[in-house]
Length: 130
Image (tube, rainbow, N blue to C red; front, side, top):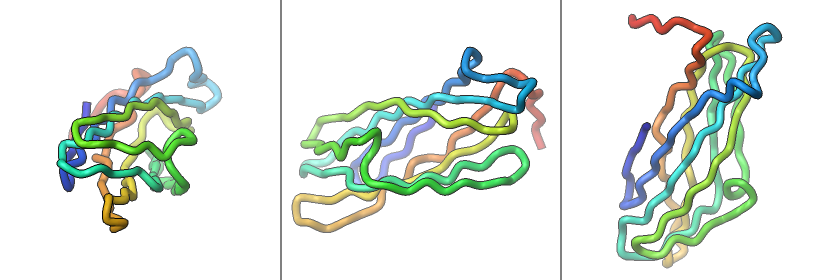
């Protein structure tokens, strides 16, 4: 599990390799990732946009940008949280994801909340420490 808190917004990510949707013989590996966004502050915020950078083991990077997450732009009052699950395929048995959410405060100001980098690891590759 990976987590980071910025401007009283805590983002927690839990990636899971999806064996049943992957096909290593065809260089197709799939992960789900569960994200929880918690408002630990004392003002209401709304998630407006997301940005992801997804890098496979060969260094190929794909950028994903767009409004909201899973079709929603959740409003989080103080103490509230929002949880969603999404996924990503890769052509390699491991990779890395990192991103950010653009949030809007009650005053209309926009601010960025980083999503911590998280590792996408399948059981089809041995882990090597450098």
